[in-house]
Length: 219
Ligand SMILES: C[S@@+](CC[C@H](N)C(=O)[O-])C[C@H]1O[C@@H](n2cnc3c(N)ncnc32)[C@H](O)[C@@H]1O
Image (cartoon, rainbow, N blue to C red; front, side, top):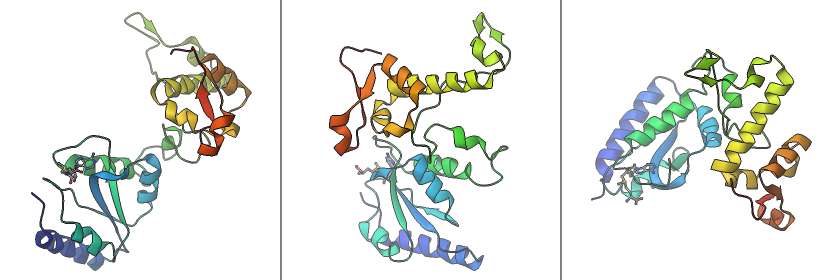
């Protein structure tokens, strides 16, 4: 079963008329679909810059293609997938996109700077996953916070965080490490990468792969 053009056309016209009536500028249309481009933090940042967003979460086999083609003549359309799996409907995908975009808007997070350190934060040369985080108390059920975090030494703490990010990224998302440009890593990063079994990959550079796992290393 495919969702029909008429109800979607009527619904979108009505939402657009309401939005323009309140003086909003051109929105973007977000079409959740497993066949869309992957939804990433970079795309969340782009969408957070749009004046408003309209979503078309579908059910069944999706929406008659002519609806997307029609509204693509009036506004930018982003067909996005939230992952390589198929949900029964697009509602959960809308929640995912909304939550990722909304927390980037001014006034939503208590500290507007805090999302700059998140995993996948764009702008950095290396897109690394965030390592483990801790808070008080320093000991819980016999488990201690790593000493370095209680040392008050900002340089050592930053280095520890970076090493943990490298460990986590190489373990969980080696594809992200492969694509990090060589200049993204300083001498200490390279030492840690070497310990983790990673080396520069000159043969991969033409294909955008700058690092490779060296043989024999298991994590
Ligand atoms: C059962 S799915 C349709 C799957 C479609 N036949 C296909 O194979 O691409 C119904 C709806 O759920 C939503 N959906 C399912 N998986 C999704 C995903 N990974 N990302 C975004 N939306 C998804 C979309 O709105 C989709 O139209």
